[in-house]
Image (cartoon, rainbow, N blue to C red):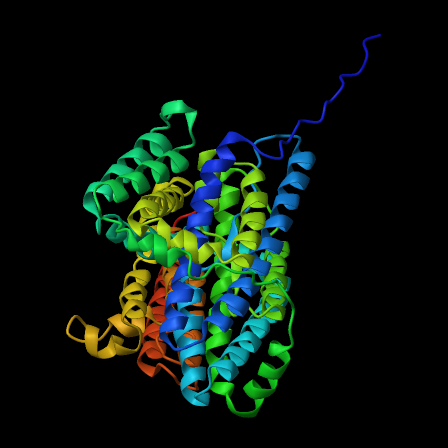
Length: 506
């Protein structure tokens, strides 16, 4: 009698060569955000002691905890499915959410209090509340995922990828054309065409070394960058504090207006996590949406306990890491490097040394892979829905880039830019969902999505600057009219079906 086959459990490595590429893509994406946070907050007159001593260490704690958890989660999936090609989820600060917290929470809090420390405490409390809300949303995450079409969710993510990541970073690439275009060429050859680099170096590392060396050789970087780099070196311990508790008191006694920004952006964050987990499932790794939203919420709350003011999320770069063939090592390395780099002030130093035009092309690739995935993981008939879902982010990009001057700056283009940009994630998903439903001739479902859009517009989650009753009346009416039209077509199809002669049996 033959012996039963022995199933050997597959070896899932702690680190492999492909993790290096993915590490650099994720590290750069996060470092770009950390640098923007530092420059913007210093520009708003927040002292360096708060920026480098509290906000960045708090963000590093959240990034570290989340990355370590998702590395463990990848190992669990690898064991469960007995395969070694599982990619850990990327984790970090979402760029659109970061801008909302900078200009929708920190800046108004600073203007209202006139005190940088009080404003920081209010923002820490807002961040803590955001994490708590996302942890609660995790309870309904899977239900929402089942009822939203993939084309709508991935189209919305592709909109972020096109504008905030690929588009924005292509601008940065061309700020130093000789260097930027050379690095972009290396990225296309190594990461898109998958051609090996000299000395078998990871593509991203080769690109950064060549690009940075070129920048200094042709004098585009300037020697003063080096001297600037060392001004922020020091020791910034990762220590918890009670700023969040004091901030809660301030929030509920006189700054409730700030919370009207927190709710929609937290919903956005939860949906972004859901979309990115969905994109990962389409690429071959199935993670639990509810668990990921809960981890993101807890990670955000932990960051706030250490002084951080920015919610964290499963990152849009995850599919890029999957395409690169990464495992869990890039996630572990990212968490560890962030903690160390923040504690010793190395993030500011690194950001000063490496020109943005050198790191930007790698993020262009991340954006490209996200947009490609949105189309590749959907049936061709849903491409129009994906395309429509991408468009609201074009308006959101213009709006957030001009911040508070948006109305005046863009009114010359169209009065529709700012309202389309407000709540762009919701608008993108709901327009995409309506289009998918109509393509499938599910007109009643399309009408239901139109009703949700009308409700969101009525309370100000979409097309309005803040939450209020009847916040965007014209838009509410517009979506209701859409719903009525869809119901008419549902009725017409039903009537045609009823009048169709029955097919006689054989």
